[in-house]
Length: 468
Image (tube, rainbow, N blue to C red):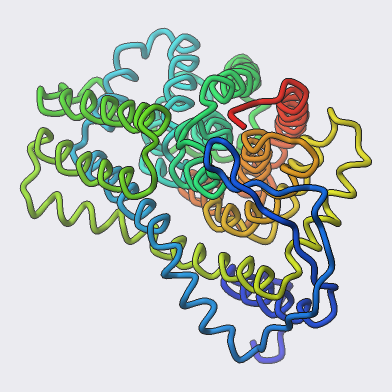
């Protein structure tokens, strides 16, 4: 209708990032310019000398130079961008073989008379899968899980929470997550996937709390269906699907599909090992993703053209994120060329320095949660905040590994309560669950997540979580 007022809508992330570029450029005119001296440590990594700050002459950046900064940033970020593109392409090839779909269906069929045992097993399975895969890529599993949960006496909310909450919390910590941990550690000059032991421990804690939360709700709904948060939806389904198809008609996993699972797990383990012990960087990791796509596709009995089409389909999903990285990186470059990034770092460090040591990690985590409201992309946020927070960590004595953990938690956990998050909204839309209904279920759990993240970041800071 003409004249009808539209409610507030959060702008596209490109608009937000470009607005940040304009603000950053304007800041070069009035924020005092200053620099730290940067030195190479024994390991060859660039570190900030916290006692070397000095003010220098102003270096304002022309607004007309903004397009050139964006273009140059896209070029300089190319190794990170192509690492993400090849990673999503490889994952799409593995999924195209059907190995993971069939494997989960077989598990559902085998344990269908042991509902709680299967529910716990499924939560653990998706939690492990979430360490690598973003829940937005698991949307295809939602209908299968909803059917199973309903046959067990649960509801659609349980099915969605398995993906969004169980897989989501593990994706947030990201022991082997390419789009977040890999990018953040690359910027922080840390070995790829280093510090994985503590991340796995934190993941286990999050998954345990999340699993208990989901199982308690499932038991309540099973015993008292009227307490379901989606009761109307469940009543309607029962009325219209009295003779639902039997999931016993599940195909057997072929030998080819078994080899795909083995290949995928083995090559993922090789990437972790190579990043930690062989110092693999973005280029080497991209090469391994290409190898993974070819091997999984061939052992999965896909034709060369099918492998190519699947790889292209997956790669397309990450192109927007790749552009976001380039645009976001230009913000840091403008601040650096304007000689004000160190002044900003000094200000943030000064605030954090007044906080007790054990609170510095949680404060950095909270800062990342707030930033995530405006930059929901994990890789885009990493490119924006890590160049700022790494020097802060150097100055206040926080390890870069703790800084990356605080980023992981702040970026990831917020994705499951922010309505602009594709990882959340895609799964809710497939399940037919409204955002407000999800928040009735998820609100208390997010409070627990927030507390756990603060504890994890605090312990990391106290125990000097390494390397560096």
